[in-house]
Length: 208
Length: 223
Image 1: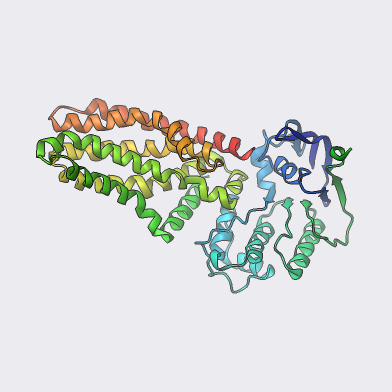
Image 2 (image 1 turned 180 degrees about the vertical axis):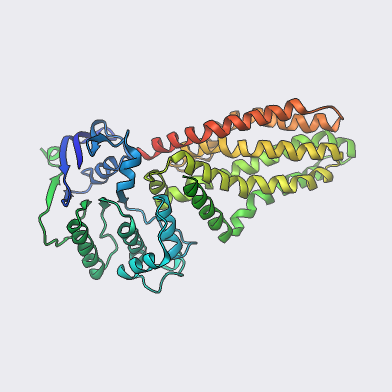
């Protein structure tokens, strides 16, 4: 379903990785591993088409994501390091404006169900600036949950989350996998997934 | 697609209305500069009338230039810009929505307050009408062309000087034709030519600037 073909990434004249190929099938969970600075974030940004690889292609359903952008973006959701939360908008408006970028118009009830799932019930009308950083991350989790995307690309999804938050993320990934979705993620925290998981290791070549 | 345009426009307007002090900045700048001028020179009606078109247009241009930074900065800093680029909708449409919001929040207030400043600078009534038309055609171009510059410099720390260097040469034709239209109208001559030129530039900017901006944003994001 999703494939990376001989990707190469250079950053500030440093070769982060080259000839990196892997594929992600339906119901597959893939962890990108590697030390700091090994190019995990760069790789994820290449996978979602924000960054251009120096060489190689990323394919979605057999077609390059650059020429097939509309279809790919309708089926892929990405969350990065940044919170994407506007301090002047309420929690509900924040989720809604994130969903609007994907042209999803969901009812308030559906959004409220997702918010209570991520532990933000009764926070609907609280402005973003009054939230803690963990709660801001939870808004993104609600967004991912509601995005109806088949492929989740998650860059350090556990940042700032507490123990319950980590458990929530794990259960969300499991549920997504069971319903046929795929996940590509990076993390430095231990994620205890009770399922098969493939992994890609970055940063080996650099150390010789 | 229209829905995506509409939703983003509403979001930006709502955000701006919730931090109103930022909103008033360009307008206050515009009014301050224009009102200070008569105090600094001999304020005879003739002298003011000769200066008025230039002073009002330059102030409006600088007011827009100073407000441009906010167009993409906040979205870039909190990651929302990435989400906009990952939208299944064409980025051009979303860029156009952001530029529309920017114009409604900076350009339009300038157009509305300008007649008052025109009268204050003792412009004749005909010239004030032309001033409104020229700003109405010119300020959207300032927002549209400005967006190209901002999208190139949004990732640069303190990119303000760079932005001015990129944008000002492109603003100069608008300034010349806009101010000239008002000037000529004050002398009682026809101004159709100048206004048609501004209209043509607006049509050109409206069709090409969103495309250029979306490409520039993708380049910015790819570093």
